[in-house]
Length: 68
Image (cartoon, rainbow, N blue to C red; front, side, top):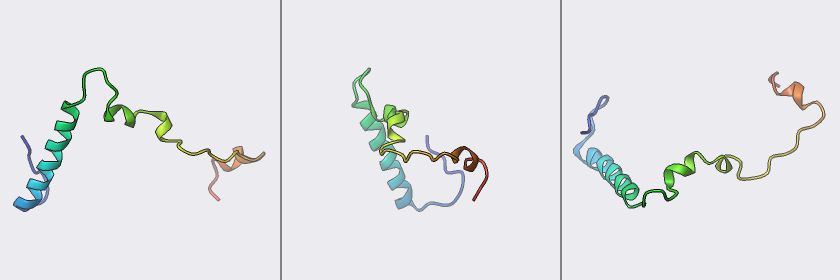
């Protein structure tokens, strides 16, 4: 059951939102149990650091707290 708690969507907007929810549910239902799915990708720490971060300088510890 879907309930609109704020706003007044048009029937077209509501249909578009429901289509997205149904497509997502169908995609998750098609993943076999135990297989890595899209939900696992959000928890993957490698997603956050995709590129190499610059190395901090000798006084970096002092700049981490105080805004510049």
